[in-house]
Image (cartoon, rainbow, N blue to C red):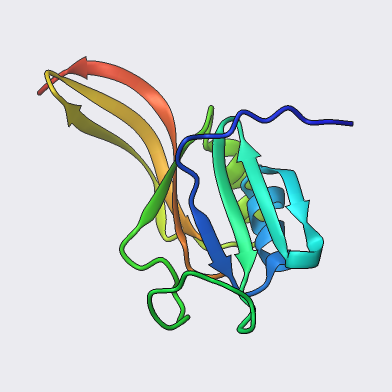
Amino acid sequence: MTITLTRATLVPELVVADLAASLRFWVDLIGFRIAYDRPENHFAYLDRDGAQVMLDQYNPSARHWLTGSMERPLGRGINLQIEVAAVEPILDRLEAAGWPLFMAVEDAWYRAGAIEVGQRQFLVQDPDGYLLRLGAKLGERPVGA
């Protein structure tokens, strides 16, 4: 079976300590699918309704573009915002797995010009400490409503 994939124009590649553990999190809990992988290189390209990420298991003898030491939590200073249809199914899977949240679910409104856009969101860290902010649209409203 061939899977058609429209590649996003920006796809982060995350260096991870254990690809199998990362796939359990990203696929089983967050709901991504493996679009393709290269098991011999410990690499997987994931997709979730157009949100895409590459996972590459760290190997000291392989070529990686690292700007510093590999100390957890990885990805300091970045959170990956992922738009989803609803956060509740993901929250249910995380809770069933006993996976802790970095920030509990909240409804947040952000100004975008003359309007505010809302999203129900929460934050969770993957096995390597990368921070994911998953959010479902709540709609738009005038600023200050």
